[in-house]
Length: 123
Image 1: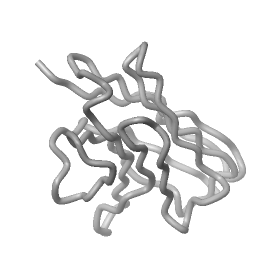
Image 2: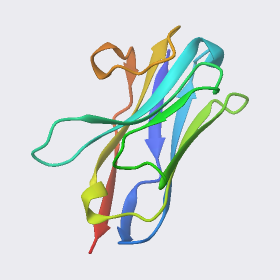
Image 3: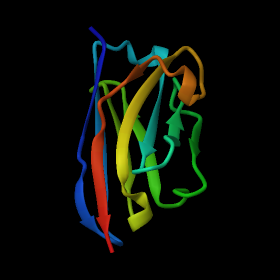
Image 4: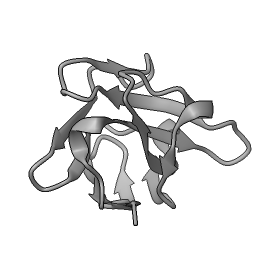
């Protein structure tokens, strides 16, 4: 059974850091690109970052460039999102998602989703 489980969310002050983890159990990792998405209250879900099958292609939303870093460890079947210089606008539920055999992460076409982890950034 393929399952994505996020962890690492919590409450942090503005300017602080968090590292989110996504455990990808049951996945053959090199078949999948992985993305982090977020949804703030009252807003649509948006892509935060995407890492390709090989890890060689990485994209970030403009709002997080220079502050967030995505990475993957295929040996441990884990995808990470390091978040630095957090702002109140980063408050959202963060979701990990996987898509097979393509190097992009279209929100409407992701094959698997985790249940999310809440990140709250206080001013």
